[in-house]
Image 1 (tube, protein in one colour):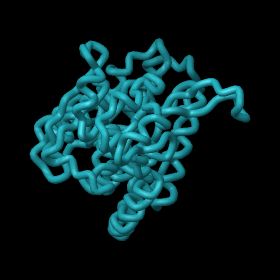
Image 2 (cartoon, rainbow, N blue to C red):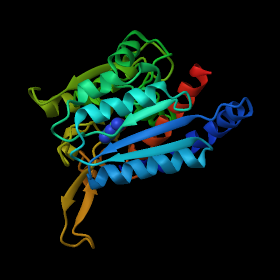
Image 3 (cartoon, rainbow, N blue to C red):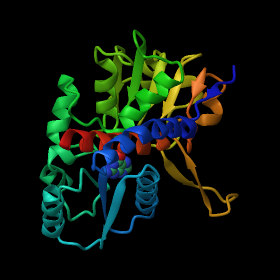
Length: 293
Ligand code: GUN
């Protein structure tokens, strides 16, 4: 079997197209959805992501601003900036790009944001709203994107056994929470595997849908996948490649070459989950603007 490739770029574009009408409707009422992205330091990958987020917001007719701060910015200055953004009525969504430099306490920073503006969905209030199923909260963008990829590819998780590899606060835990809810596009039986899991391959092979967010390049090999499974690879890892022009290439957490022979559908890296994260960030910002107005 050769798997069908799930085209995240096209699905992300479709979601952004759907948002255009809602942005236009808000603008006609004098509300321009505003997103401010804060980037501390000079991590090259973060700079790329932040540029893409700003571009997507501009294309939708939203107001986007990026605040770039040096890596040695004192934590109190970042907290003061968040206070200012919290009070600014033109800013509906705030995103602090992670990871932050080592001298900063990211949970303290995330707590400082007003939950109503936390379009990343990382504030404990939004985490709680996700767990209890309150739709006024913001769902983290990457996990919500995984759900969209599944539903829009015809792989509705309802009734299926979904195995999630990884228990991070950004992906593993929220994706499990989203997919197990009693709701359309969810309603799955979810198993979460992690670094403490015994017989990982025995667990992953049970997944009719396998969501991999392990943070380690190509840890899921073809023999760990149930034949015919739908594989969503959330990983983005830069690995050295002497044959590549820039000396490296991007790989996921799944060995794509092996997996494509076993799965029925699979996301590529890049071009799978990544574009969805941005599309869902736009959706959350529109939701923030709608709820604030
Ligand atoms: N860094 C990697 N992924 C994310 C994300 O979804 N949000 C933020 N703020 N930073 C990230």
